[in-house]
Image (cartoon, rainbow over all chains, first blue to last red; front, side, top):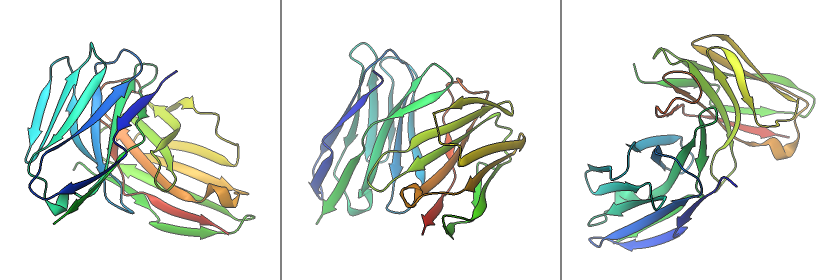
Length: 111
Length: 115
């Protein structure tokens, strides 16, 4: 079964603290994507991770990929309010370019 | 130009209406996608076009009919929809054909309400 499990599904964060979202996927893939979605808006691409051990950073967000463990993490450093959104990970299933999405993690940053 | 555009932004239609959603990209991408997204859920793939040919249909009901008139344009024709079809419809495109590893760029979506 093609499946992606994200946890936690909800994360209430305090400003200034660090947090991690985990993304486990069910089948071999070396293409992992992170997207952000604000309420009522479309998906914004954050990171594309293309190989085992890949690490990418943008501002307070850092994503990594372990293809052997089928695990990706999104680490948030010193959370700020404007990071409040829903974050999706997705892996590319090689058959026809199908993206398999996780359930999404809803982040809320409180002062 | 790294943009996918979609029209209209909002659409309200009755169950007997026929309407169309339009998606356009000018990035030279050869794969285009339709997704449906319900509130608080991830996007669900509906269709994939690769080099203007339908390559994936995720068992979507026939009241949704996709069309790819050329490499830049993707339409979704709607007919006899049900209220449960109300959702955000997202178009995306990517380099290469379907199956390529390139990231998908999403359009802003069409918010569809079926009354």
